Structures are given as C-alpha cells and as structure tokens.
Amino acid sequence: MTHTKNKVLIFLGPPGAGKGTQAQRLAQDEHLVQISTGDILRDHVRRDTELGQQVKPLLDEGKLVPDPILIALIRDRLADMEPVRVIFDGFPRTTAQAEALDMLLEELGAPVSAVPLLEVPDEVLIERIVERGRQAAERGEAVRSDDTEEVARKRQQIYREQTQPLIDYYGARGHLYHVDGVGTPDEVYRRIKAGLR
Ligand code: AP5
Image 1 (cartoon, protein in one colour):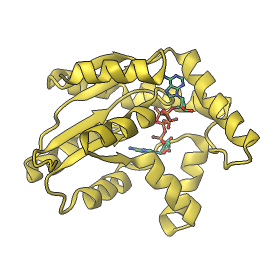
Image 2 (cartoon, protein in one colour; image 1 turned 180 degrees about the vertical axis):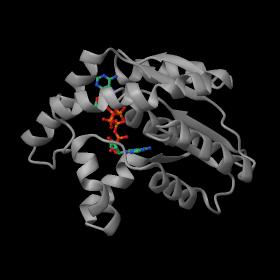
Image 3 (tube, protein in one colour; image 1 turned 45 degrees about the horizontal axis):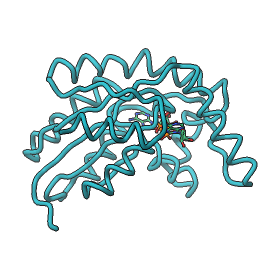
Image 4 (cartoon, rainbow, N blue to C red; image 1 turned 120 degrees about the vertical axis):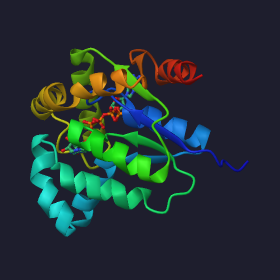
C-alpha cells in the first residue's frame, strides 16, 4: 500500500523510557521513517567523522549536542521527503529545537500529528540503561559510553532541565498524550496505538 498522507510523530520521554524500542516498531507498522538523533550521532562517532569527533565528548558525558548541529541535521533529513512520514526519537530535546522543527514542518506543510510521552519511574530507567550496558558487555558487543549509572543519572538531570519543558510546549498545542511506559514492550506498544486512535 502506498502512503501519501503526511504523518509526524514525536516520541518524548526520559533516557531509557523505550523511545527507540517503540519508535522502531511503530515505524515498521505505519510505514514511517524513524529519525533517531542518538543513533545518527553515534554512527558519526563510530565512523570517526569530523562531526563524530566534535560530539563524542558530549555523548560520553551525557550532555546535549548544541542546537544548531541538531537542527541542521534534521533539516537535511527532511529535505525532499515527500510525503513527510516520520517518527522522531530523541528530537527535539530543547525548546529551541522544537521551535526550529515547527518552522521546518510549516515550510513542508506537514504539521505534528501526535506526541506520545513515555512515562517511567527514574529508578526503572536507570536499571534498564545499566542492564543494557551489562548485557552488551557480556555479549562482547560495543557498550554505549553513556550506559553507566553515573552518566545515566546525568542524562536524567539534563532531561529534567532541558527537555521536560517540551511537555508543556506540546501539551499547550494539543499534541501530547501520556503513555504508561512500565510493562512489557508489547503492553506499552498497545497503549501507544490506543492513544493514536
Ligand atoms: P539518545 O540515543 O536519544 O538517548 P536517550 O534519549 O538518552 O535514550 P536511550 O536510547 O537511552 O533510551 P530510549 O528512551 O530510546 O529507550 P530504549 O528503547 O533505547 O541520545 C544519546 C545522546 O545523544 C544524548 O545524551 C546527547 O548527547 C545526544 N543527542 C541525541 N539527540 C540529541 C538532541 N536532539 N539534542 C542534543 N543532543 C542529542 O530502551 C532502553 C533500554 O530499555 C533498552 O535496553 C531496551 O531494550 C529496554 N526496554 C525498552 N522498553 C522496555 C520495557 N517496556 N521493559 C523493559 N525494558 C525495556
């Protein structure tokens, strides 16, 4: 089936809430392009590009990469996309990024469709992140440099300070809906789908 209608979803939620897990699944089901800024940045670090070298220390410490870099990156990804059918996972993360995205989407005539907010208690988030690091190490795979308890707590703090204001931003525009992010990935997915209907 060809999908011709624009659709723009933004997954909001703290580090470890399941944004990537759920966005990937929904993207497959709904024929959307998943744009994960964390994955894009980590890929640059892996390939040791100029951008990768620039952002690596920030990722290692759990700090946000400057807005202009992210906004340019997203502008490139959306260029020539027709129709615009995307799920953003990890973007926007600041009010400046959200405002820039609104302008880009307005130019493209593709407004935000919905913003699911995944809610998970802090301690569960830390457990998930540390567990991911532990399992990757056990399998002999690359461990994300920010998957330690110390950096995970730093990421949580930055989320509270810089990203949480977006809850009000999208709430005021009527796009936001709350999703209980605790339970199996299947259960969480069903809640997301129910909210979209
Ligand atoms: P990013 O990669 O976006 O990381 P994050 O938001 O901190 O999120 P995570 O990937 O840790 O968690 P998630 O919510 O996607 O959950 P996931 O599905 O992976 O960003 C990394 C860094 O890049 C940032 O710190 C920053 O430096 C930079 N960056 C990225 N975007 C930026 C931006 N816009 N502006 C500036 N800087 C930016 O799940 C986590 C774990 O839990 C997995 O192991 C998963 O298997 C497990 N899990 C998922 N769901 C469940 C469940 N229901 N039950 C049990 N376990 C579960």
